[in-house]
Image 1: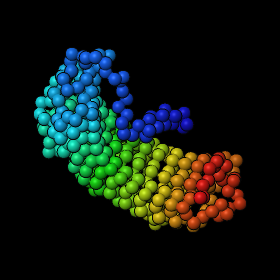
Image 2: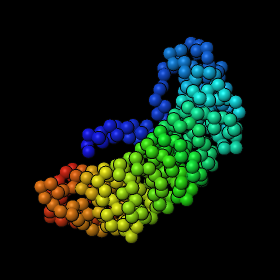
Image 3: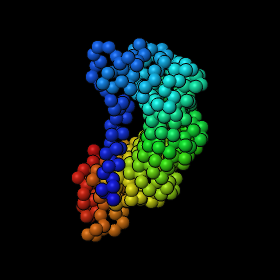
Image 4: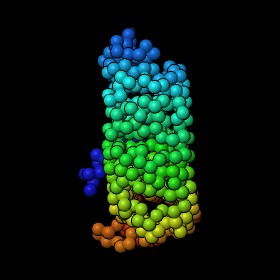
Length: 342
C-alpha cells in the first residue's frame, strides 16, 4: 500500500499547505507595456499572454475579458458586480477564474457570465458575500473554493456532472448537514473536502469513495455514523476536532479501518480512547475528558507482527499521565516516538 500512498500524499500536502492563495503562477513584476490582447485595466505579460492580471486595483466590476485569455486574476478588489457579456469572448477557453477577496453577492452576478464558462478548471471565489454556491457548467472543473462566504444552502445536483472535480473547500460558511445532504452526488474523483467552520451536526453524507482527505473541524458534530468510514476505503486523513463528540456517539470500531493514517479528535468530550486500526500513524486526542489509558484501543493482539504503527499520540489536556500507561505499552506502541501527556 505504501508506494501507492506516496504520490497521493504529495498532492494532498500541496493542497493543505497552499490552502488559500496557490494560484500556481506568480510572474515577475510586469515591466513595460502589456501584450496587445489585454484590457486596459489590467496587465498581460508578454511571456505569458494568456494570463490577465487585474488583482489589487480597486476594481468595482469585472472588466471585459478579451479573446485568448485563459487565466484571469481578479482577487483583492472591490468587485460587487459581474455584468452580462464580460466573458463572452472566453466562454469555452477560460481555465482559471480567481475572484477571492471581493464583495460579490449572488444578486449581482448576471446570467450569462459564470454560468456560461464551459471550460473552467479552477473557480476561486472565497471571501465574498455569497449565500449559495455559484457553479459553472464546465465538466472540466477540478477545484472549487467558496470559503469564507455566507453559504447557507447547497442545492442537490449542482455537481452531478463534475466528474473531474478533485478538491472542494467550503470552510467558514453557515452550512448545515441538511443543506449539503445531496451536494456531492455524482462526484467520482474527489480527493479533498473541507467543510470545517460550519454548522454540521454529522459528517457529510453522500461523499464519494475516492475521498482521501476530509476536514470537518469546528462544527457541532456529536456522533459518527456506524459504518461511515467503511464507505470511504481511500480515506487517509480525517479531522473532527473542536466538535461535541462523546463516547456514546462513537460506535464500536468505527475508526478501525485500514486506510486511515491521521485521525484528529481533539477538543471534544471523549472520556475514553476509541478503538483504532494498527495502521494509524497520527492520533490527536488532546483537550478531551479521557480518564484511562486502555491498551486494547491500540492493539487487540500483540506479537512479532501484531503491533500499532502509531508514531504520534497527543493526550495532553486530559485526565491521564505517563503513570496511566500499562507496563506492556512498549510492546504495542513500538513505533511511537512522541506520546504527549502535558
